[in-house]
Length: 89
Image 1 (cartoon, one colour):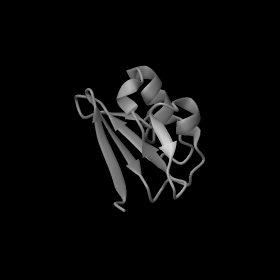
Image 2 (tube, rainbow, N blue to C red; image 1 turned 60 degrees about the horizontal axis):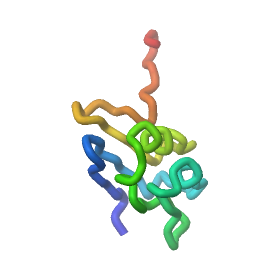
Image 3 (cartoon, rainbow, N blue to C red; image 1 turned 90 degrees about the vertical axis):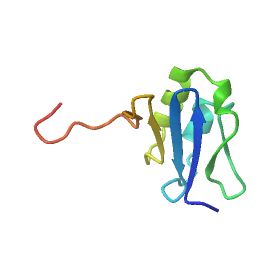
């Protein structure tokens, strides 16, 4: 299987990094309509388009290992929430 699974959901681009995912399932708990753990115990898309944008981003941001990345229509990363760099914040 591919290392990444990507889906365009409205204006959002969502990527699951299957090498980073360890199957905690926080995304599934936060948005069971959007995500499921597959036969390998890793996050996979179910029906992310069925979830409101804010809830979907929050579910992606819930991943404790940052295996799910979300970009908005401008290409800016919205999840995981970008960390402030040195001296920033």
